[in-house]
Length: 332
Ligand code: TRP
Image 1: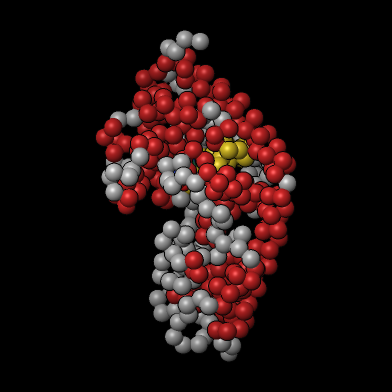
Image 2: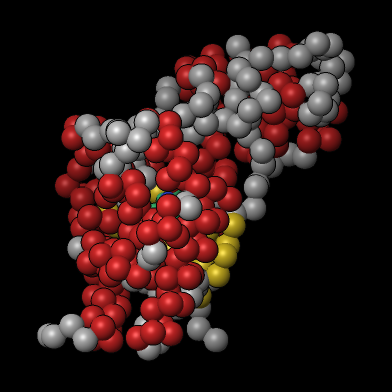
């Protein structure tokens, strides 16, 4: 059996990844590079379905690339590229729009949630057709596995349905990807509100640990994290959600077991513990942040890496698109 093809995508919608993004997705992408043929895509066209700020889009696309590289996505092992640099995404996206039913697309919960939030008048057509572009992202590469979070399950299901429909009606064209929902590695919660998930859209700035933030700022966030009644450092999600979250963070980054961290802090208070957690986080992020900043400082080199990735991606994408066109009867 040949190596499995992996494809995933991330939107360049913020200046920095946060600890939850890293542990929940990017770290697993890094692991999947070994033993798989991985394609990772910065989906800038999908980001246009939200607020469009040209300066920010550009900066965030480059910054996402720099962070992925600094976190261990290797251009030797995988193909890292920017979606808009591979025009076949738009081309196959249209074909997918012509396969999908209006009712089927209307049932996408992410569309329903996002369009409800801004009011029906502010929702744009691109938000509605977003899942068909995502299906194209995946099917162009004949991906076997699509590592994504639970919130993307429905989009992957739709992709499978569209691929199956196309294959049945027009002949074998696309690999039907498996569902591959990322395991919830460690549950990372907001530092200020440890009962909800660490997230930039819902959380407070002070509750989110950002990779590109300064070490001082991240240390300060940890030192002012919400703690719980009592003074013992023990893992108890119900009674001590704040301390439990800090234990999870420490353990995920230091590799030390929670039990052994608890032991180290027996008889010590929350203050000492927070100092230690801050140190673990700051030292873990420090080299990653400086490498990302270094990459951003040499934009030409960073763009060269991305162009090389796009070149490799286009070769695969063009082959798939040509087959799809041919099977549809499109004249060459
Ligand atoms: N919709 C995905 C998200 O919001 C991003 C995405 C776009 C994606 N295209 C993809 C993920 C293709 C996996 C595969 O997280």
